[in-house]
Amino acid sequence: MTGYNSSYSNSSFHDKKSQPDGFDSSPYRLNSLVKQADTWGTQQLEKRTSQLYDVAARYWPLPSTTFEPYVAPLPTVPLGDDEDFTNTIIVSFEFGEIRKTVSSWKNAFVQVLRALVEDHRDEIFAYAAIASEFKLLAVNEEVPPGDSLIVPGLSVHTATSTSSKLVILRRLFNHLEIDTEDLVFTLRSSGDEDEVDSTETESPY
Image 1 (tube, rainbow, N blue to C red):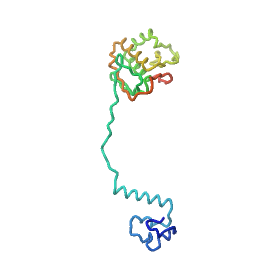
Image 2: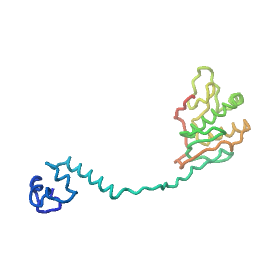
Image 3: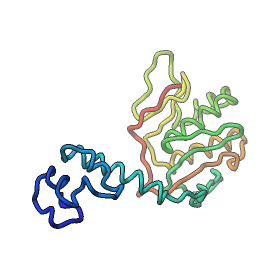
């Protein structure tokens, strides 16, 4: 520790303190901790560094600001009759009073169907009896591979592309005479390719 005086050279810490013009006689507050120390090592260096940082921070505090960077709103797109959602990633959907955050198009597909069953159970079960993408399940019957459970007694085939899932939704909306513009998706940056959700597990509830 030579400080700012080259004459200290490689002298011991004790000599650097006690010699003429040594640290013990330093008038500078910068050296107050050095003057109080009996030894000088890593612990003392870290303590002095912390003290100097605190002093500097009082003299030159970090500027504060209320600036917040602009965050562009995520785009929203209704299901519609011919909108192409290939290479898009869904964040959430809105349908009537329902707004749900979802993890994938498969998740959104099943959640929308569950919402529809809430209000149109009889019509949807009757439709499922003649629509190949749906399956009516007997009590205790297992959900077929590639299907996801909508509600007990009803599953839908989900091992398909995003576009195929949305075709199924459009057909069902038309059957129920529901405007496809009523279902609105919130999207984010495009993915690399059309999703094929064949392995994601859906909760039965």
